[in-house]
Length: 194
Image (cartoon, helix red, strand yellow):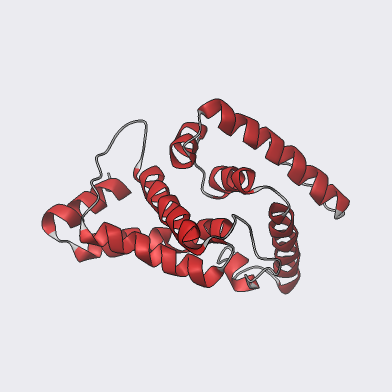
């Protein structure tokens, strides 16, 4: 049975196994940047905050213990969110996305190079509409939707990251799904998030 991400990180801490750390870094780097960009609204700052988050992990100053109810991903995203909040306090900005979508089509693709040019164009257009619709959500709702549907986290995990109770997470999810559906339909696109 392959090691979990948490076990890889623990191996890095105990045995100084840099390959284990690299595996974790490569797995979460891009998704963490997208998550942080949703908070700080600037891709360059998001990349820097992602690096700060992994610098904290590499310094071994934070303690991770595997728990049944909170996995490594939840712990990692909570650290990243705290870094983003500190950054925003320091720079006195509000939680928002930039008005211009700074992501290019390579960042939005799923890495499937076998798709025909027509399929790629349709997928790119769908992703652009989805990201544009996400921009219309308030910060908390956008973060919950991102963590649930893009990162595959469950409400209890999201509640730990967001420091909200599970009922609030369900409420934000329901509100976000309705708002996204309405926005996408106004854009002429049907989306089912059930």
